[in-house]
Length: 285
Image 1 (cartoon, rainbow, N blue to C red):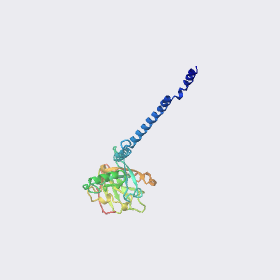
Image 2 (cartoon, rainbow, N blue to C red; image 1 turned 90 degrees about the vertical axis):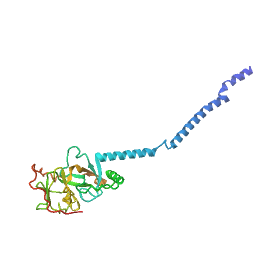
Image 3 (cartoon, helix red, strand yellow; image 1 turned 60 degrees about the vertical axis):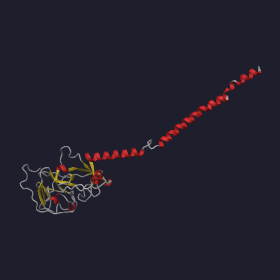
Image 4 (cartoon, helix red, strand yellow; image 1 turned 60 degrees about the horizontal axis):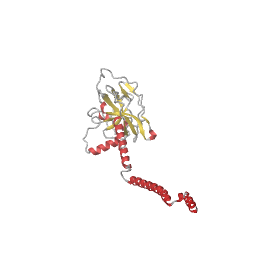
């Protein structure tokens, strides 16, 4: 009886059985080993170059951004760095403007008073072969992003006369006239004359007569009267219209328009009775 009682008492004490204790401890130990192994594998994977190619992602994102900006610059709006004083006070040295390339893309053409960027090859400068194609490509890319000065063949000026217009300077009061109408040019630098060089020209079809707002500092159509094309810029050489000043932030605004040409009539259908006359030529810086 005592023996049975002892066995009976020993039965419920199975919770303290060494074998069960070993089994109970083995389960958590196995779980811990598995977790530690998984953590070690994850750490090793994160240390591998192929596991976290952050520099590759950075390069890809950077290249995609540059490609996107170049596409926008080529088709929509191109930054353009102002390198000279020729368009003061409208545009100042160091201004970065955005040139609207869609302004004349769908049949519209430059109008009197527009500030335009154009390729002066064949009108303002002679075409020269590119001596360093790689350097030229890099320079063009930087200029397209507004990070470098524009090519020497690119210019920014104001349209004063379009196809068929007769532009004369100056009348008895020293003012510019277009198709016989006086143009009051309030955008000029205070104290500047409309032109120190007299001229009387008729703009051929599909051409533009362009001038800078800072007349005494602008090399424009007046300086190329004797050159091939007579200083007239072909319409198809216009890159776009300068619509915004994007930098510096203190000058962040649209390029101001002008009503100076609102009263100018269209040229006569049969053309002007007198052809181009060039009383004199001169040069400015």
